[in-house]
Image 1 (cartoon, rainbow, N blue to C red):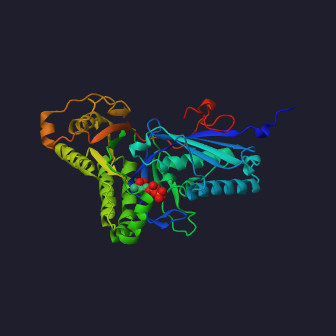
Image 2 (cartoon, rainbow, N blue to C red):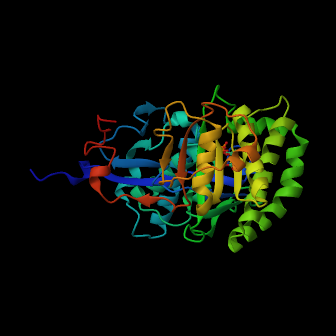
Image 3 (cartoon, rainbow, N blue to C red):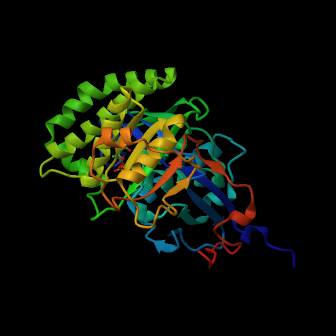
Length: 402
Ligand code: DP6
């Protein structure tokens, strides 16, 4: 009997990056469509260090849509997952009806199996939802043969996910339409624009699980008048200034704005009632360290930013990385003699002068930081052409080794 090709799953695998906002998104004007109260801007981190990989398969033989995340089957009925699936299928149907030959008509009526993993530990407390939803939407679009603007769909998975649809420096324009059609991400500059820029993720040893961003920002919108002021009167100007600083590769301007915006975001968290605390004593010590370091040299060499958790993300230029990393290692002595303390891009050796250590004048805080991931700006989502990299086997079920 000839083989029934329609029973063979159609499988695609893609990867997507994490992004870190330098002008923060905090607060929605529409919860269902995920429309923000202000625009935001981020840097896409390199996928060599941090990425999500997602495999999507469609087959006539699948009974229902299913999803496995980091080796465990999860509930596909989650409303945000459903929004992304529905919107991609809607777009595919529309394109097919418009006569787009790229759309895979057969698979449109098929169920999907989705399998997704991160190459960084969830315990690291890094926002994985942005990379996760970006990767999901990008992979679904590919399996159904849909091309073009997809950030509006990724946004409906998680707001910050729309920015992970592009590489380099990315803005999410808030838009003003009720249906959200103009609330999209757009690349400001590609990842090749500022090759000297380096990013260090300082993974702090968190003591407790912080309030999630979705519920945190809901309370902030309801109770913080500082957040309203920020969205209406501060962010519009900062978006312009930040875009300028990036275009001109003006590190001092970029760094100062990044730190001020992180601080204002955390101030709106404190202005939320009841207040939300994302920064802990380690975060505060990092803030002091950065300001003292910059003061010591009389110029802004390093910047910090913090999201909804205690991990710091540091921006600096390549030439300052070795000294700054060794300073972090000196002021936050790791548990195990430095082995594995620095992951990602290699960091050269550096010695710290007594003058610098004394100039900083902080008490070392042992074990405050678990490890550092050294990375840089990177590209947007990519398809993985090598079929051995698929996370689903040819029967459409996850590999057992996961
Ligand atoms: C502090 O995108 O995780 O990281 O849209 O509810 O999924 P939802 O929230 P999310 O919020 C991210 C908040 C932030 C700032 C930022 O990334 O801009």
